[in-house]
Length: 228
Ligand SMILES: *Cc1c(COP(=O)(O)O)cnc(C)c1O
Image 1 (spheres, rainbow, N blue to C red):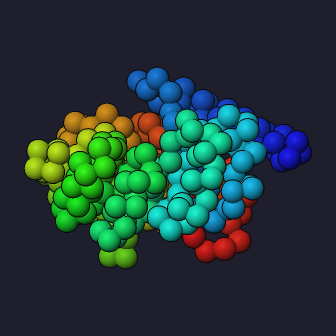
Image 2 (cartoon, helix red, strand yellow):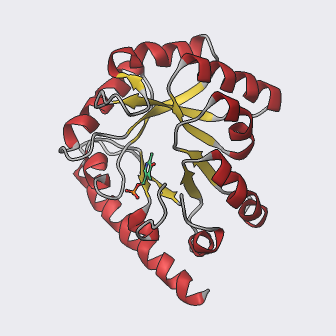
């Protein structure tokens, strides 16, 4: 465990250092950029060194997987914040509200309504992000760009959700900068304070464009050997 703790500490220091340098490139820097350590596909034993090294914010993309891994870790580390970063089916909303602290993938009215109902039922008001399909890709989750601002308004006014920001995953194989800039623009129009954008390959660009959270998986945990 000591060796893996040193490894986790080194990986975290390296990423945080790069984040700080990128933050200085952004004109009006936010206070700090949050690092969401994306632990999907990695077992609890691989996550624990990161907890020992002080990391407290994690991202998972599947409800079922989070349910298997996180209750045990949470019992030992009660101050963690677990973000759901993957698509959510309405029939999993109840479990998602039980297991997660932040939902980053709100992208349609039906889901927003059911999440709001579950939060009220469980007495847990979770901060949420609206996921935007920033590249307009048919296969990707997220609300359409043209509907995003209106959807944020509806989530707040009609569903009563606490929408704190926007989230996106830009298209593969294209420079991500313009997509991040577009999300930042939508964030200003929708009047949300936070932007969750940037992954292992592009988090510095995202921070330079105003990201307030980056979601970093493989650059911390190593290459995923099982499909996410
Ligand atoms: C897997 C995943 C990440 C992390 O990806 P890496 O390239 O491993 O950093 C970030 N965001 C979402 C939504 C993901 O599914």
